[in-house]
Length: 200
Image 1 (cartoon, rainbow, N blue to C red):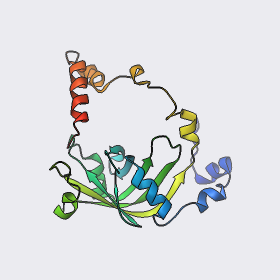
Image 2: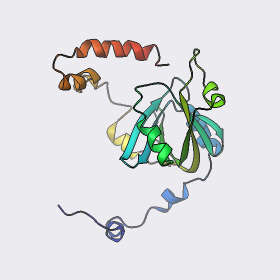
Image 3: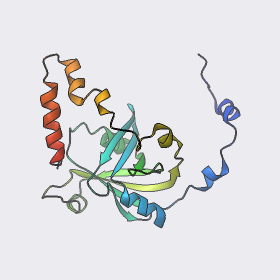
Image 4: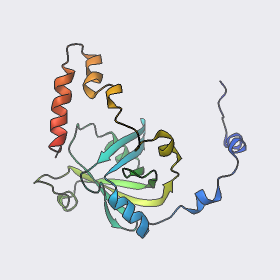
């Protein structure tokens, strides 16, 4: 199978970008984009580092990030498994992308920019919930923001499909592949209770 190896070949195959796809890119968080972001409880954070790329789902009971101004959002990093893949990448290479999704909407909002990680108590303390604080806060400075074409979510029927989770392995099933004696059901039941009570 032959790979496309240069931009000229790729551009010949696809042709020029649709002008509207270029014109929609904004250098700041406009009022409409702010409303979208503040409605989003879920995003995917993508980062890049020496070992490669990383994509991490992030979610909250309310807005997943805090809009500080028209070029800055704060993303709390709540305590988890301590892998810190995204944070390690940001410390070494600040380039990030955030992909915001809102249930029921086939649009996606993408924010590209540069990030830093802070453990400053003013930042972490501002996200207090039930006496808990995030261990750090990711400060993202926007370089561009735009909405993504709805076709992918429409094709996948992401919001219209019935619950299909019984067709796929659980987290416990993945672990049991590594350890045949592992009690996958107890793990999944316990994790569901843990998540229900909120991780923080």
